[in-house]
Structures are given as C-alpha cells and as structure tokens.
Image (cartoon, rainbow, N blue to C red; front, side, top):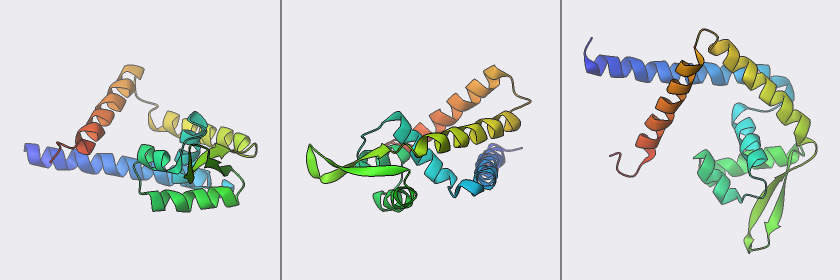
Length: 147
C-alpha cells in the first residue's frame, strides 16, 4: 500500500473513530439534554473556574460565537453562570453552579465507560502512546508553521 493510501486510511480511521465516540457519547448522555461539545465545555470549566469566554473559546479551539451558543444553553439549564470580569468589565468570567456537579459526575462516568469499552483490547502503554501521537498530530496541524 502506498504512503498516500496509508495516510488516507489513517485519516479516515481517526475521523471515523472520533465520530463513533461522539455519537455513542451523545446517545448515552441524551437524557441529560447535553451534547459532547457541551460536556467538553463543562469539563474545561471544571478545571478552570473563572476563565473568560475568550480564553475558553481558545482552549476549546472554537469560535467565540459557537461557544456563546453553548454557554447560553448551559446557562439556560442553570449549569453555569457568567459574572462580570472585575479586571475587564467588557468580558465575563465563567463558573459552574452547584447543579452542574452531579451532571459532570454522570457525564464523566459515561465518558469513562465508553473509553473503557473502546479501548478494552489495548494495553495501557498502547493507550498512552496513541494519546501522545494524536496530541502531537493536533499540535503540528495547529502550529503556525503547518502550512
């Protein structure tokens, strides 16, 4: 198989695996009324309470308007709150509400269960290597010199 064909097969495999994981997660979390994208936002916010919307968009690598729609939905579900940034009154800082804690717990359990199922035949070293390789690939593609 030529390198070009192997590269194409690898690209399809990565894309298809990501899509399958996202679809399975959304099906299992459907009863919570949240998508995988909203879950990612909650998890990053859990790790960095008080982050600004701009910083969150950068971390999630999405456009601010896309994040705003997610935040509007999360705020409507009373899972997050926006507070005026005391250092810049033009921006908001994001915080989880108490209502978010059990939701994050359940979403984390769903995610862990799916990953255990998806990687059940993998050795831990292989999982670590795969994660590092995918992170490296993403970093290369997002670097300014990746033209």
